Image 1 (cartoon, rainbow, N blue to C red):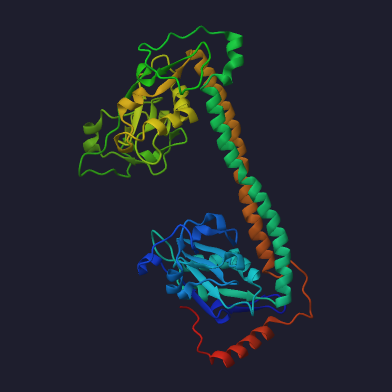
Image 2 (cartoon, rainbow, N blue to C red):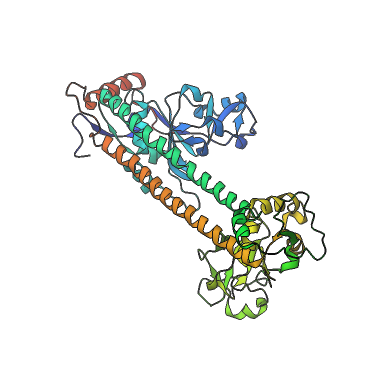
Length: 471
């Protein structure tokens, strides 16, 4: 590699490490996971170059650990993910032990005589090394790289004393960036709580208390059957009351395609809305597919119209709700969702916001999921409670929610830009470090070439050149 800083060398990782190996899955050898014991490290336990001790869900026994002897971790080992997520790194410390790992993590051993361990970890995390790994990955559904690929990574070796100075500087700078990132990452949580608080205030009448004092609309007539059990529902303003969705609209289900038929990617003018398209209170065009012309008449009775309220009725996202936008007027609806239509004196957006509110979502979780194997039946949708107020106040509530949500969206967009900038800043710092520009060089430092030759000579004496690079 040309253009290296003075005293630096470039070597394959396999010529530096005494061993590059990986673990395996304990269940493959008849060992189950435990609720306590020896930590079993997976990719998801790696966080910002460290093992997150609080993230462990799997532990193994002493017997299982001994059985997976080759992947018993030691202080100074470097972990590098080689399956699924490629290139996540971690330095194993004494505090992480005892521990073992699986086949998704390469274990790089025996580099302490050449590398300050943090210098190597930071370098593996740098964009240059990450690109090397990315260029070697293969596979479809789950990408992977081999241990040989890891061994063939070109690594920069700086004089040891310079490595220590670089690491000291990196830890200060990257530490500051990570502190900023931690503060930034609280913003999405705060915004989620803010949106939920807005919905809770809106659907209990608190958001428009000043509006009612100004305009003073009359009390809305009570529910026809008076059968709403409001004992566990929030208290409403005197001009509001509780009703059920079946009194203000009709719930209708969607429809799956006839057996043996399939959706097409070509635009037939008949979009088919799947559960995955129902998100963020609207319908997404991402991955949208279409109903073939020859079967559109067979499911024509299961269409949605502009401003119909949708709600998902099965799956992990049961209860997600929103509005059908204008560009999906006449689209076909999946059997995994329902629409609420024919609304009487009810603003569709107000109803959708109520369905998304923490009060209604809690009601759905507590009272619906236990029935019909987790499917939200149409009659149960119509039994869902809903607050009723004047249509004028509903429209004012919708206006205020949308204004506050727009404000939250603006903050979220600024967060995303700031988070992207800090991610790039870390890589910029690492790039500068591995160009030899982060700290001054000292001409008195022992060159890396001398270090590498001395280590090579020692290894020739101890193992006569028979040391395996990867296993």
